Image (cartoon, rainbow, N blue to C red; front, side):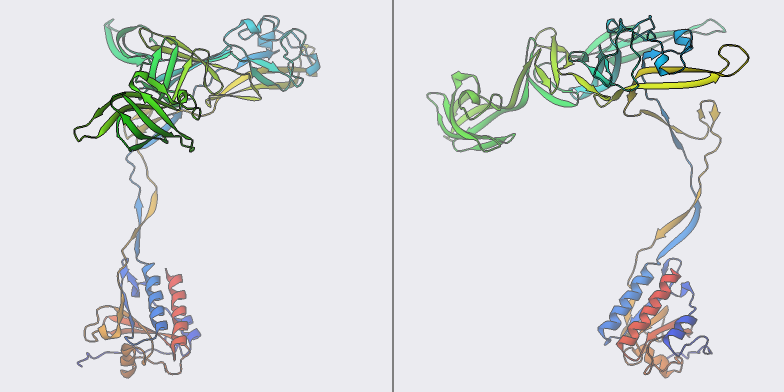
Length: 577
């Protein structure tokens, strides 16, 4: 074998340790021996006949080096734009219930709660000397929440909310709604049945709104026109066309987020459910619809009827006969095992197909429900249907069926309504005698209506844009460390794969001269100074062992000693990373 002449670095005990502990303590190998510019700069060499423990050590070292395969650089964040948001939530005004503030009552004489005037009640709109007219003021609360429900998938239906009566219940369950009572410090609220309504208008129209403005300098008038699609007529709006005329047969709509498919509309009665259309069956065929199974047992062509086995999702089943002359038939009329609306069938025809097989043509509907004005439509809410022209429902009004009460009333998950009492005490010169030694007491009670979710408006701003009078001059980005992980590659080779005449990287040799032929070569050349046959485990660094490339030998007198040395190198690499 032709081998280049290798110059060994003259090193002393400071660089080459005689024991593992000493060698590890003195090991001072730069990181770029292992990794350079985020890429591997050393190969791990293991003997082709090495013990499995040596192979495991080589694998561990490879993993440790792989964890250092990345580059890090300080970069300036590129600020192209910035997104800002503003709270645009609508906060309804509280409903004033009681106040002896000077601006409300005209004088402040009370010094404590028990001395509060009993005629400082508000009647829902303004102070009138008593609280007895509270019930005459309706509604107590009204608001519109836009675009909450949909018709035919178009989310254009608003919630028009009215609360006509709110009762305040003190700790005794009584209502302090008469002259002579003090406002309770804590109370629950009650909306009696029938006093909370939500109106849904399903007639959506397109409106044209024209606005004009006059230039203050020249007096020139500019006119602009915009199109608005809404269920309410905007101010000055001119109707252009009807987008949706209401709910009709075949319409899909939502109400309080629940979806309904309309099967039929008749006056103030709405029938909804799932329409599976027309299906064709041969004898023996079985099909499933919403969990309901229909199997055709027999078909009569002459009598135009079929024998069916129908099975509910919970396993209830029965044999039923339906004929063409029955028209639309609820299975509950044919079997006591089924409830009304579960399965509604229509036999359109029975005939012989071109293949000679008998065929039944069935229309199938499941979970059919009919609801009329006055019925409970959604749990806890009764419905009023306002019909339009033809078989159409234009408006649905939901009304609370039962009393709603509690310290925090939930309004459709959008608002929280609660009673609040606040009190203040101040010492000042109230009697104008020159002495600030007079104490006065004020209190205010109100019904607070808070949104449960905030609404934000977002804007994306760039350099040159303006925000509320401020001009965006510059968008600065902070400096951060950019980490680029490089893909790992195979860096472990066998000693038989190393060409000693053409070494092209640093080498990490796992195993002594018996297990690794490259280690044996360095020992023979006098470059390795450790007696590996007696070593309990050492790490030896030989600089420029192969020209520009250096070597680390990780070895010992046996596989256990080599494993111990490898663990020392792993600890070194962990700190180096």
